[in-house]
Amino acid sequence: MTLKERITEDMKSAMRAGEKERLATIRMALAAIKQREVDERVTLEDGQVIGVVEKMIKQRKEAIAQFQSGGRADLVAKESAEIVVLEAYLPAQLGAAEIDALITQAIAASGAGSVKDMGKVMAAIKSQAQGRADMSAVSALVRDRLGRLQG
Image 1 (cartoon, one colour):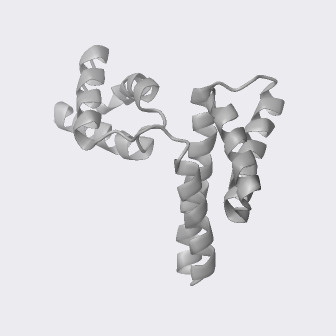
Image 2 (cartoon, helix red, strand yellow):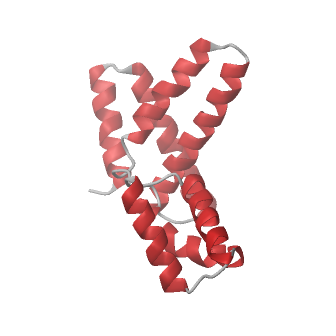
Image 3 (cartoon, rainbow, N blue to C red):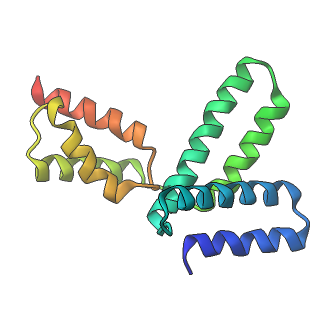
């Protein structure tokens, strides 16, 4: 079963169970997936669906920061609940040691020696860590590691 099919099945079960908030979040995710499929005229594979879900989670995290600064605890709770539902569709997250090993492996494989080679290293890591790690945090770790190599 593909990830998109799993999301569709979860939508049906949420509908049967009367879970209105969960159903609304799942429908939003399916709408985003279908929108991307229509825009690009393709059927998304699991990796691409994970990318859509990650983007939605990132948007919610940014909204939470805005709502917290505005003192809107009700909206923070709503966005947080949506993140919980969406995170169920991401693969198991990598631990710090696994991320460190991936970075070491990617630097060695690409022959990177300075921050200028960051694109090569990130490209190698992205295929393995997509959906399993916060890529912005991984990017910061790679930049730090390459900076130490250079200096």
